[in-house]
Image 1 (cartoon, one colour):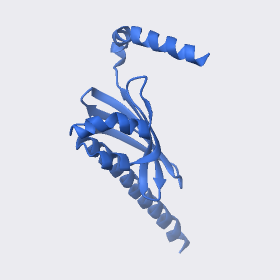
Image 2: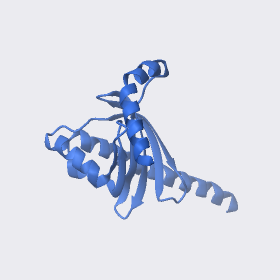
Image 3: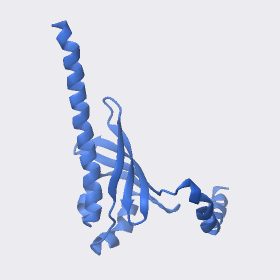
Image 4: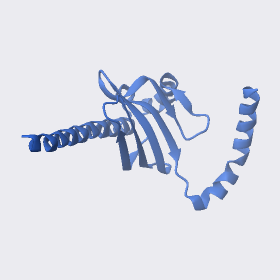
Length: 164
């Protein structure tokens, strides 16, 4: 009997992990699909009320309410954004109510990288924090840095002034 218990427990834990991972994968997929379908309610229902969305622009660090206000006109026009997963890694800590992931996305901006945190709530897994960045090949960093130099300098000057 003892020889059976350990393999059985390993099987159960592997099964539960796979099921949890599939649930999380489904939430992320539904979230991206809701944006592609311009379904405002479905999109924001998959986020916690205190969610943070960090966009590709350095000034885009939004609370959920601020992000809703920004996104609403796009959703109202029937065209938000369409991100399709190319690769995704999900990390689950045993018995945690938080998981994290990173993903490569096919977007209207080319390949982007997303990373986020989901929280298990009474209503299932929800996006709590998400960061979207444009993926720039290392060989192009110098030219991209030159393109954004004035913007970066102006923003850094402004941020340093407000810090003091």
